Length: 61
Ligand code: SF4
Image 1 (spheres, rainbow, N blue to C red):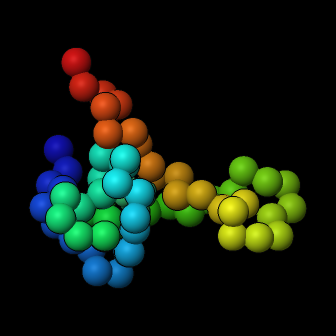
Image 2: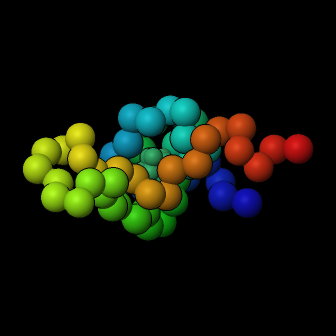
Image 3: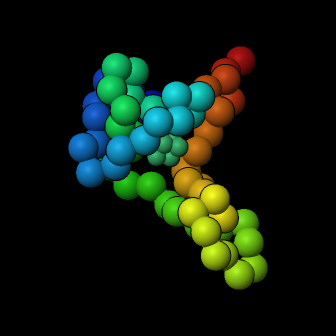
């Protein structure tokens, strides 16, 4: 299980709905993330995604 108290200061992130977001600060708690695109020909920032995102409630039983 990932420890979300860890803040990877190399990965700033404001996506608080992600289960890997640091609890207290705007950083990711993962060591690395994968960035990708959902577009065939990306032209602007909105075309790019964090592919390591998982919703906070995902995987909870
Ligand atoms: S996995 Fe991606 S979206 Fe989730 S906290 Fe880390 S950088 Fe943000």
